[in-house]
Length: 172
Image (cartoon, rainbow, N blue to C red; front, side):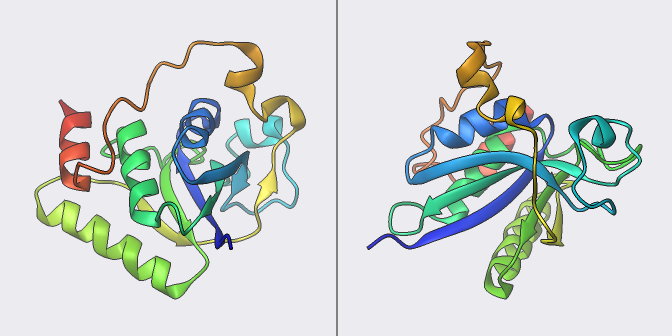
């Protein structure tokens, strides 16, 4: 029986990240959208004005029998540079992971603290999930539908590497 769970990652433009998350083993589905702002049901255009406070996020539905939040975090830190502080000017592209369960919050906080203790300047914030607002249909599966080249690829063996190794490799 599948143990489906959801995780929410903000890591820059959601088109590429949705594609990369969708290719990870154990991921059942992905959806682009917005979270963490003050406007109900924002449009992509409204979020781009940087006045809503929302981050572009990828909702990842995964089978917890096949993967884990830690493995998804390895992808998250591998897909983007989490040392850049993108929280200013509206924070649309900020590095953020949203949580719904206290145990997930604790896991996320512990992992980010461990990375910082290892000397990595991680700017990722850990925030309680609010309403996830799905983006317009034209943003769903954008890379797959349009055939655009993905500028990053999940080339690392995520199972074999630690989070610290992934972040260090990403920062080289």
